[in-house]
Amino acid sequence: MTAYRPPHIAASEITPERFFLNRRTFLATAVGGLVLGGATAARAAVLQALPSPYKLDEAMTPEEDVTSYNNYYEFGTGKGDPSANSGSFKPSPWTVKVDGMVGRPKEFGLEELLTFPLEERTYRMRCVEAWSMVIPWIGFPLAALLDKVEPLGSAKYVAFETVVRPEEMPGQAGYFQPLEWPYREGLRLDEARHPLTILSVGLYGRTLPNQNGAPIRLVVPWKYGFKGIKSIVRISLTETPPPCTWNLVAPNEYGFYANVNPAVDHPRWSQATENRIGEGGFFGANRRDTLPFNGYGDDVASLYAGMDLKANF
Ligand code: MTE
Image: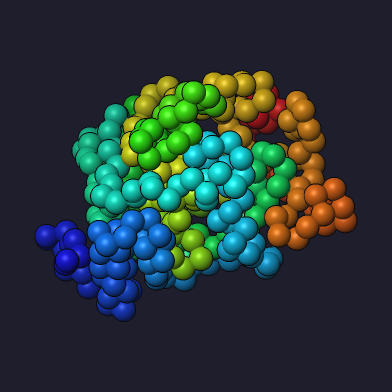
């Protein structure tokens, strides 16, 4: 199996040679592993990435917590369901269709997506349920992908959709359907283009486990975790705000923006503090204060200048 390479660009022009070799190794391992044995083999694939300035002076959440305490309703509503029920999910082959208000709509194969220079970025993540983690993601800026399709001047928003595969996702197959599928999310175009916004293809030095959204998911660290849509198959540029799953379910509880904001409580609980997973003590001394924009205010507050963040929660 040879790695995909855009025909007109030498690999050495895209990334340093060392990195390119590592990525080739990844492709051979990941794709070969899938042929041989399914999701477990893909999860084991080492995914090397360039270092980035996005680091935190905080302890990382243990990998076993990151991969066993999940929200992914396509595999069940319990925190342990995604890791328990996603073993038959096939993250390869995979394509992401990018369409809508763009000059060059295109369907990207997974191998082409992996030719974007990958970086390791350690981000603080905050779930709307008032728990948080620190996760070393591997990914690339969403802006890099958007540049390739040339958004039209009229495009104002970006809509995302998760795959629908009831045969591989038991949460989509049973009698009880907790959500309407596909899971959908959306960002304003300037949020989508912000350098902090990435499409992630890995964590902790390996390809994404199925329960974390393999093979590719969104990560927006200043927003509540539900914006981080998993297993993306379609990205569409739109003129009007796209429908978002949790906003449709309960618009008074989950806004379109979903910026982490300790000053705006969820109608049923406070958002002022959070429990860092892996540190123990949900109600105890380990609870820490939640930061505006999850601590990324210096980078992103200007995106919302002049907006009432209580009304636009
Ligand atoms: N994406 C899909 N397709 N389905 C989901 O149920 N849950 C969201 C988000 N993305 C979800 C999803 C929620 S509520 C959270 S908190 C994050 O995924 C959790 O990501 P993690 O399990 O990798 O921590």
